[in-house]
Image 1 (cartoon, rainbow, N blue to C red):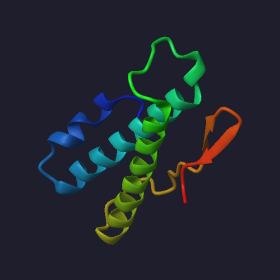
Image 2: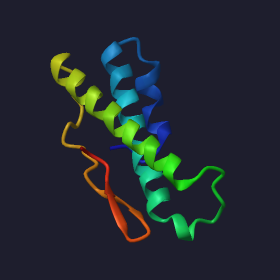
Image 3: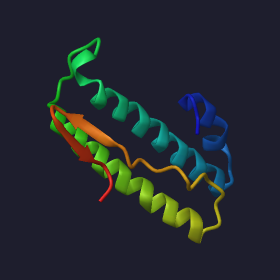
Length: 102
């Protein structure tokens, strides 16, 4: 897991496609984590989001599907990524807990 997108720059610029793949993977993980935190702290944000919360939740569903595809590809293409990363948490929406994985 990366703590900032800057940590993936070297991988992105590499001529090895596996490094580029890793950069894409870890950037996605980073973005899922940030967006999940935003949605889960919706009522305490220091800004007012432009879109409705449901749009961000929908985006998280898609991002999780994308992560799953990258994990499957990594296994098939022998790319060493941390495949133990999953986002099985739920998103808080009022009194509802919405699971991110099917």
